[in-house]
Amino acid sequence: MQTRKLGKRLEVSALGLGCMGMSQSYGTPPDKQAMIALIRAAVEELGIGFVPFSPLGKGFLTGTIDEKTTFVKSDFRNIVPRFTTEARKTNQAIVDVLRRIADKKRATPAQIALAWLLARKPWIVPIPGTTKLARLEENIGAVSIRLTPDDLREIDTAASQITIQGARYPEALEKRTGL
Image 1 (tube, helix red, strand yellow):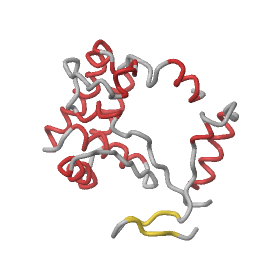
Image 2 (cartoon, helix red, strand yellow):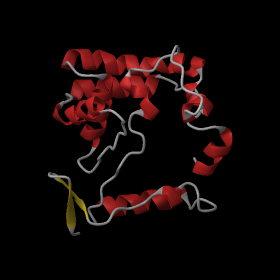
Image 3 (cartoon, helix red, strand yellow):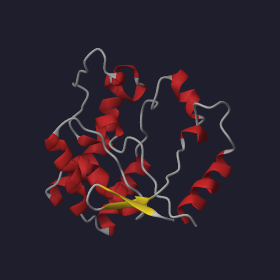
Image 4 (tube, one colour):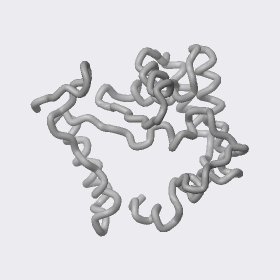
């Protein structure tokens, strides 16, 4: 596979794989197992990477949002079930785990969440969004964080024991994802 450089240092496959049609937007979603096989083939013969969507959970995993946070009227999170006051209060448990590890590493919860993704596979490239230079610099700092096997185990164990409250999207939009 030919590659291209994004920015000064990031080298990626010349062609990526869009997955939106695998779950929503273009009619009835295809067979889930067939789509998993397609993604695996793209990663394993063709060298295509994976770009996680919303790797910081629409801002929640940054540790800057809690049950007291209010959003401006036009903010999409106002209609997202996972962002109700009660859901944010319950889901804070996963942010608490990230914060515990972040404190040990002198990092932020956002950096730990991104470092966790980076530690999963070398072909995963998170693309967190931001509107602030300081947050961009913070996010970039995640690539320097090395999570130990114990750190990864702590995150994975905690995540497996926490039942996330609230759907990712309102019911009508969630149905379109095919999940």
